[in-house]
Amino acid sequence: MELLLFLLCLFLSFTPAENEAVCSRPQLGANVEIHGLQRIYSPGAELRLSCEEGYTPVFGPHTIVCGASGAWTATKLICTLKRCPYPNQLLNGEMLYDDTTYRSVINYTCHEGYILTGSSSAVCQANATWSSDKPECRPVTCGLAPIPEFGGIIYDRIVRGNTTEYGTTVTYKCLPPYASFGNAEAKCTASGTWTKTPTCQVVTCPPPKNIERGYMSNNDQRNYDYMETIKYGCTGDYELEGSQEVFCQKDGTWSARPSCMAPCRVDIQRGRILYKGEKIWIKNFEPNKVLHKEIVSVYCMNEDRNCGYAIPTQCIDGRLQLPECFKEPSDIAYKFNSGSLPSEIEQC
Ligand SMILES: *[C@@H]1O[C@H](CO)[C@@H](O)[C@H](O)[C@H]1NC(C)=O
Ligand SMILES: *[C@@H]1O[C@H](CO)[C@@H](O)[C@H](O)[C@H]1NC(C)=O
Ligand SMILES: *[C@@H]1O[C@H](CO)[C@@H](O)[C@H](O)[C@H]1NC(C)=O
Image 1: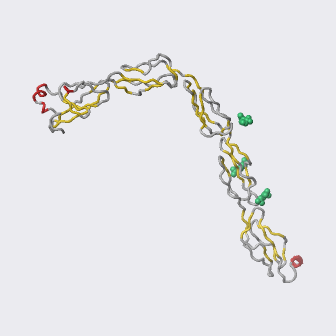
Image 2: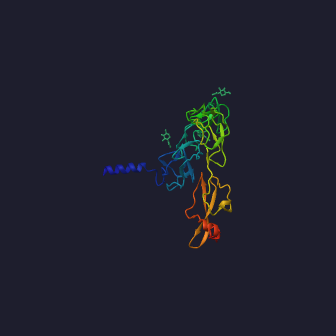
Image 3: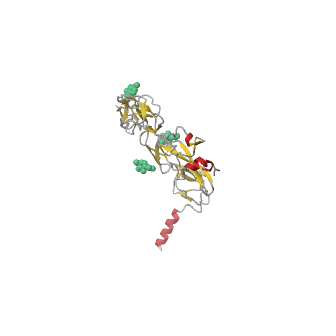
């Protein structure tokens, strides 16, 4: 009983005078900072509120007052994390970040062949700015590409001064009789050096050989230089097939030579043919010659419908195959009844 009384006295002694109410510490949202923190406040006391570092206040008011009834006036103040501006893209590099709020970190890296100049990371500061400017990714540079003794190079872009940027490509060209051996292209690599460049070496071809039934534009029996050319032609009625001009190739051989293809004889004794749009009796076809690749038609009979029709065949290097439907007329039919030949009757 005495203990209870003691505790009651203790309690009463801590309760402020009479029936005047007081305010206790206000319960506010996260990250709200209270200026002038005490255990209890008398009515009329004013508390200034703000946000912790890195946070922005939204809504308000920013002060609360302790009321006569012991309650604080209301505030809707909340503190939100500050946000740094979204960084623009890093040219030739990457940015890694999870967020852009206060204390977030951005990491910068450059693509292969580029060197980072500046800070490789930045932190979002309390005043919503990044701790460092965006770095730059500058290309690795190579010196000028080596120029071969007997050739030239062509850059794929304009080169200023005596450096070239990573990724620059040069194409090598040797001046005949030199030909390039190795990769005809070189690149400025990420390590700042050029890839292996080709060499220019002399190339010659043996004296060219003539083709059967043909001739050459040049009969010199000498070695020819790389890229030198000669022309071929055919004698008589032979027709050239393939490239008229051949050249000495990089491997010291000639490019494919053409061939001379033989003309054909239309091997029938009696009947008419269709040649270049003209119907000609074979005995009047003088000379009996069709050039390689030329087309000539002979006439066949359609027995069922009793009509004639022309069927084409082509001369291939001296061979003119007559169509299977073609039947050479007998001597008698040809001489005395030529009007009944497939070429003369109604056409199908
Ligand atoms: C940035 O780099 C640091 C150190 O290398 C690493 O600990 C952190 O995880 C990286 N942050 C991001 C967002 O990649
Ligand atoms: C932001 O804060 C940093 C670090 O305290 C300071 O160096 C910088 O000048 C501030 N920037 C602005 C715009 O206030
Ligand atoms: C590039 O040229 C400048 C002046 O023309 C010269 O001083 C420098 O040594 C050269 N650098 C290289 C790598 O050749």
